[in-house]
Image 1 (tube, one colour):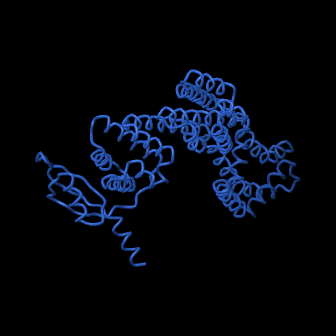
Image 2 (cartoon, helix red, strand yellow):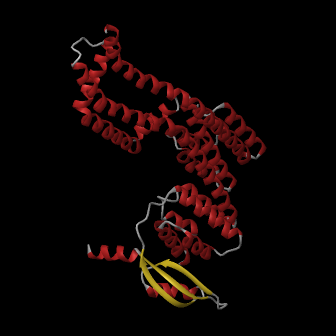
Image 3 (cartoon, one colour):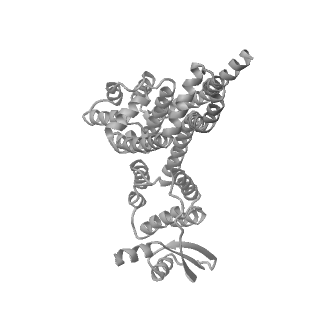
Length: 406
């Protein structure tokens, strides 16, 4: 236990240094290492004369997000295209990072590269942040001597995928947030407002209309079991999401269901096709063999149905089938994708045709999101108006009835 704790303490240590390079210019930076001797030796190998060194403990910080990785990739690609050496590029990017965890991650990778590990191998040590697609592209760039170009392509790929995901989230966030707010408002009305009306109605001494009695009955149920209802909704939602993440059967069933939902199913399907074609185009253009590229494509699509189809395609292609034939046998790809893939195979420009297909579906998603945003708002307003208005009318019916009698 003590040894593990000590190792963790050393691992958390970051050193800030200042020194002079071979030209006498003052340089500064920070590096994560096991001790001051390791820092001094590392800087000495870089030709830096150390003048100041201090250590500090980094704060926990937020977790490293996909956005952080995309920004790091873009910055690293820009630095290397400008001719900045790899290790110095890592120093510059890590110093500019606002997330302490990202800084530690980049310092770890930099330390591995500095000791002779290839960049792709250093990335593979952190699979939570750098998936197989990322590492394969970096490895292809190292092998072909075109790392700067591959990093730029990878950064562009990540930016397009993130933009696509943000569009889908924006389309789904509005109705979900309205439904949640409506449920909370309905619960407050049932628990707090309706009981006050019920006390007033008792003094009338008259029979209440059927709609009013129905609303009061629902209110009494809410008042008696609201804690159970909230517990079931929250607990059930949590258990559902956990089973969705961890159960392959659940993932397959839900992803298949999502593709069949009216309106939203078409949106999700087009976004999945855009990611699938974009990923395969990027991998193929980087020179990754088709069978190896398909390893990363299925997972990058974000849908279990397409991931399973990709595995089938990979098996068929590895036995000699054409890509178009293998895709057609799965039954999940639309005719346009199949036709563009066939043209790309015949013309020897598969990456270009797949990129065109990705651009088409990305534009389709953009147009659908804009259309849904304008259509969902009046639709949701009508539903909320009917629900809240129905409750208000039901509670005011006894007052109208009393006024008619008077």
